[in-house]
Amino acid sequence: MGSRFRPSRECVELGRSAVEAGDAVTDLTDKCHAVFVFGLIQLCSGAFAESVDCCSAGLELAERVGDLVRQARCLNYRALGHRRLNEVTGARTDAEQTLALASKLRMVEYIAMAKANLGWVAWKEARSHDVEKFGEEALALWHGMEDPLRFDWIALWPLIAAASEQGNLPKAIDQMRGLFAEGQYPLADEVMADCRAAIDLRQA
Image 1: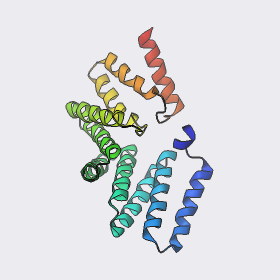
Image 2: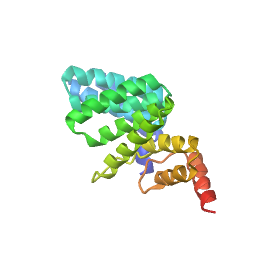
Image 3: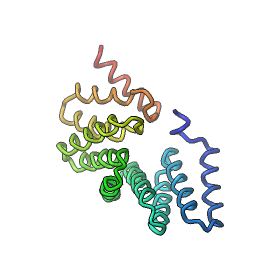
Image 4: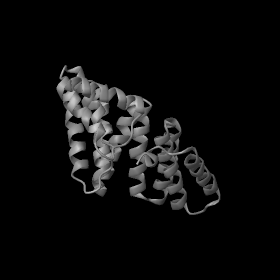
């Protein structure tokens, strides 16, 4: 699981090579796929600005060929890239567009991720009610899927932050436990160590 979400340097270079090779490809669908995949690789490797650029290029290609599914995917991960760059306006705009398109296409996993990102926007704008609303809705959608994306952290972090700011530490700690659920996206080791210490301190 860790290697899936933490691409190696070789994986990054293979993705880059695929995009460069795509310059000679006339099939825009294939080119769109290569660009989108590289954007996702960049996102998972922490190159957030580069990921936003790739997803933007992929979105343009998807719009040219009329591929709504890839449009939703590019918008979805570009929203997350904006979020990781702390760009509230970009995250909001892309998350709202993702929510509208994913709802039309019934892409439950992306409906959930859009709501999770809108929960982060709500937290940045101090709208605590919407943080809880969007976050809980996102988690409910993911957990209702037979094979969900393991990205609960996208919804959990705003929920944890909001609960902490409200002085509800038991709730924040309970939500923090969700980061350790089996198969979840592996966050940075130091972050997980701090979370584990907070949970253990609460239990002591």
